[in-house]
Length: 189
Image (cartoon, rainbow, N blue to C red; front, side, top):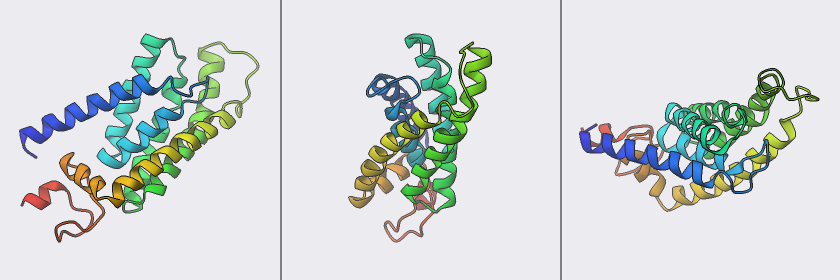
């Protein structure tokens, strides 16, 4: 990957973090942040699981520091962000798998992990281990539905593969006679 593409990836990553911070208050109630799930899934599909995880961590830290959001900003994002990208790749580029990864990772795993964090570290009383599951599931379903519609539209008009190649990510479509799963580096070789 050349220096221009590395700069483009860094700028895109920073923009997604900024967008994630700005749109996170939309439809937000404690324990439910659908727009964060939109960003997680989009990053997982465009750049992969590690970039998605890094973006979720950066957004969570900024939200906690600047907006006074509790640690739910991290526990409710990191598991879904990583699992979304992992399932997307494991399914050979199925958008529904990325959404499912976010729902399982955040809606179930993140929600259950949030209980001890909020009860013991944050000092919230009256919580059970299933306390956050309903709101986290609802948030991931809303955000996942938006991401699914958005990414499906990008896929149908050919922009998804173009963006993935430009960002150095894996593509899972036949483009310019290239076998599915090859990155931009393989295209230019």
